[in-house]
Image 1 (cartoon, rainbow over the protein chains, first blue to last red):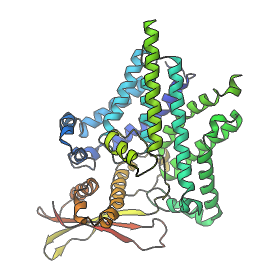
Image 2: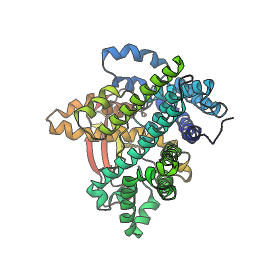
Image 3: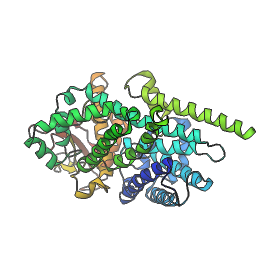
Image 4: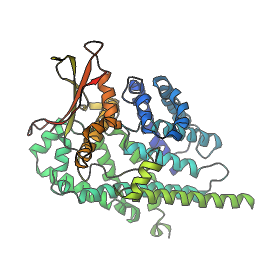
Length: 273
Length: 182
């Protein structure tokens, strides 16, 4: 059984919950990959219109159908369960992790539409864990480099999102969240009614998101009790975006980066000396 | 000693690779610059370079609706039918939300199509060329799979937008396709 005291193992564990749910969701909706489905390979392969790409993609046509992809997602679930018993630092654990990464890369070719930032964060973490734990060549320093990369990507994601909102008049004008929540795509009737009843909440929520996202990288440098404020905020933020907006996979993908943020924070000189 | 050297060399390779990946991610946050377009469209086959500008600078504040109808004879058209591409959240959606999958796909495709339309109009490209775009083909493929009234029909689809739960503005037309034989 794996040890939960290990930072990289903890990252993988949190991430695995999200990847497992995501794979099961795809299995439930597997008909989207049928020849009549929205992501039919007959249509999706048109993305690769160069002649030199065709021979490379031909073998995939046998995989990219309902049965092939259902098998792929089931294998993914089995790999995730197996990874509970084999630490990624072991050779077998690393092989399982690599196969998981391969399955994610393969399915990304057909899920070009419908995937989101959480899928990208997931792939980014898995690939980093694979290359930083290569048996025979991995080292504690390489593990640290991997954790830094995951932590910095998480900070970059929040800061970019924050700055992009700060330059937007719709966010500064405190109408953005009200507008998003009023859509059926990403909102909810209850949230819309709440914001209509308490208009001041619009301004609070918009500025809260803009400020906290932009300043999020401070969690790397601040003393841990203050850094925790950002992580608790992040947890709450992702929980409510899952609850109100249905973005459940973001919660797991971004929570998985938090052990890396803890690790980087505790690497700062004031913790070491 | 040889093993140590190999470890150090591997460390350097991985560090350079991750640093490059991080740098490219930063560059690609700026949309529509040459380098960003090159990496996003020519290099990034697997979608490994994220765009982290969630819901900014312009948050999606409209719901899109996809409707279709059939031309049965020259003068006989069926009623418009709507394909459900938006979903209302259930209590468990925060944990288990399979419904988001197909609806997110259609929503992405429709939004992608909506984003492309002004470019085709602005650059004086014929709007007919839009028919060869990937999102258009996916939408057409999606509506063409719906039940037909007869074997040999022509189908037309329409994209419309509304303001969701708020009924402040009327639904408006985004795109009306030609009739396609399906």
